Image (cartoon, one colour):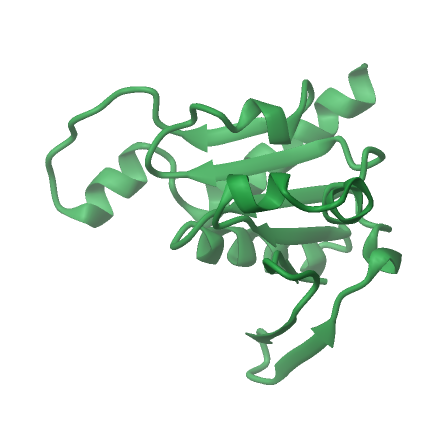
Length: 153
C-alpha cells in the first residue's frame, strides 16, 4: 500500500507496479496494518517506493508516506495524523537529501533518517547520492534496521 499525504486528506494515487500495471487506491485508516513506514518529501519518495516494492516482494508489509510540507501536516486533525503515521508503526525511515534536521519528530525513537547533517558535496549527482546512501538498497537496509530496533526495545 502506498499512501500519499494530501493537504485535504487521503488522495488517490497511481503507482506503476513492478509488472507494469497501475495500482490505484484511495487510502483510508484500514491501511494501518503495515509494520514499516517510509517517508520522503519530494524526489526522495522514489527511493521510498523502490524500497517499498523490495520489502513487499519479500512479504514485509510497509507503506510510503509522501510528506511534502510538515507545516500543512501539522495543521491536520490528530485523527488524520495518526492515520498517516500510526503510533503502532514504530519502524519508520525518513529519506531527505537536504538535511536530516527535523525528521526525528516523525520517525520517533526507533526510526532512522537517511539524510545529511553536513553541507557541500561536489561530484556528479549519481556519485553523491551513492556516497551518502541515497539508494533503494540503503533505504531497505534502514527499514530492516528500524524493525530490529523495535524488536529489541
